[in-house]
Length: 454
Image (tube, rainbow, N blue to C red; front, side, top):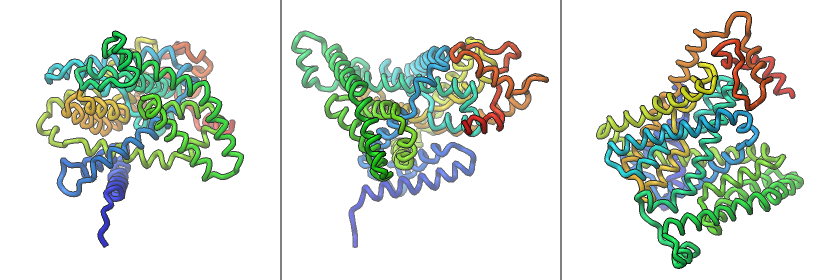
């Protein structure tokens, strides 16, 4: 019996090939994200063989974006950011500025508009959370001082991207893209004498402010209370369902009622839920589904990539990779050193940020949909992501080799140095005077065990 099942075929092909290429990437000690992107390339329209339904893939990708952003909000920690705010906030903002300027320069050389260059540069400026955390976890650096700086740095980058995603649609016309028709409140503001850009910005600001206020005033009390009520039923199934219903419901409701993006709605749903004592359980219960749809998101991005760009525009691809791996990393290294941190911390931050991922894809796809950036820019971003993700383990391997050749000074153990750093004020930004590379310390197994027991 013949059945027309494009949705099932797209999911099966996407997850099946993502598993195979992800497993291959794992065996090669590469980030599995590279395997997921390659799976998308294989079932995309630019390679021979089976081609998945692009429209269905895009809708599945939207679900992936919602759950990805929900996870970002769920793990968002003001405490972690404040612990390293003196270096993470100015460092991330400075590095983003350098990357945007480099991307803008490359876009001008390619003949694109200033607006396209800004979106392109922003896409190259933000690192992948998945790749960065995995690299730190493999080396036991998440709890170390340099790992905390890297995570705080990434939090600032994510916040900048969330704000950017809110601002781009109303500024699309100003950036050289398609100006969306003014409706409702924006049309009323225009009739009262405001310019179209000012009307769109004002309307967006009011809607976002209303949504944020609602989430912080009502959602902060209602969502944790709802989770607590469901948890008391003792049903793990209902608890898991409630978390997903909240994440998807808030994302959809925010778009339908307030006109904000799915991404922003999902981010705030996760951030508000993070204030609940049950947030850790919520994260664990929904992780499998979030992972599955995140995989489909990366597969859908891979489907958009035309591999011929590697042959047709090799210099542009090389320049894009250099911006990601060299320019952005050099900026991060210089900023960290300028704030008085040692070489090992600076090199760790530089290696951690020498790649791009989730937000880069969301941003560049949005730019293409609004006709701000050309399709070639999307191909360059995906190519840059693939190549930088493949190069990132090499950079960390070189960092590990460098650390072996430059151990802590005699008489001072790395555990002692890390303990001394932990005793400093969290936001001091100062390094102990023992050595320029003193922040290279990592916790000993016994310290990690003590922390786990605590």
